[in-house]
Image 1 (spheres, rainbow, N blue to C red):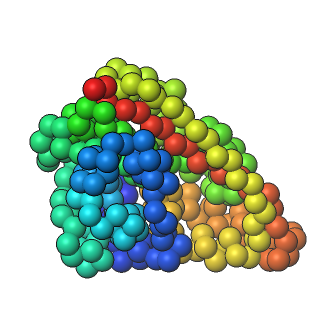
Image 2 (image 1 turned 180 degrees about the vertical axis):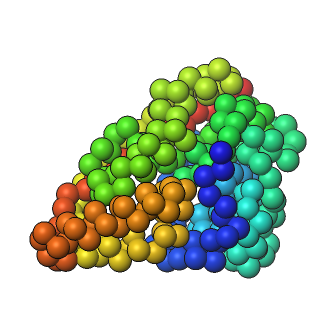
Length: 255
């Protein structure tokens, strides 16, 4: 089941709240690489979206050979306007259109749950990595953030995530089965308080998260109703607790 048609929301998706800094995991990888690799590093971002992460990496590493790939031509159209000297390739993560051993570093940020064949995607990443190369996946961890405000008011969003995400253990097992080594996981928990009125304004723009787009119209309206009732019982400036958990999993291709 396709979660979201990003061609339909690409223009709305590309907003300042999704800006990126330089990939810290890439910086950490390059610190331990040989000077030869660092001077001519080859980077691939799978599920690159509108190219904001690549734009940040490009500015920091102008000599790197960087490629972005995404299934959505609408997202890639925006990415091409952002960095015209980067190859933007339409492709499916489970069948990457690149040769074996083509890249030193492959990243995937906030997109693998949209892929149908996740184990095949992981195997494809291993195939296109050179020996000694690194894969880093970053996403939220739905099983470690029950207090997320989105789950509070839109409980169907949790069900969607449990359907579309692999657990960290499942993802690591798939990496081991594919042939990755030195697999590590890291979780970063963030706890905040969110103003109800501000959250209603955010949630009222359906494109703001794939959860709103993927759920049914009735489920979406019911969630907005829950927020409105919470405001009626309190005040728009009142806050509620929220939490998220950022999960990073990395692994290397054996030499």
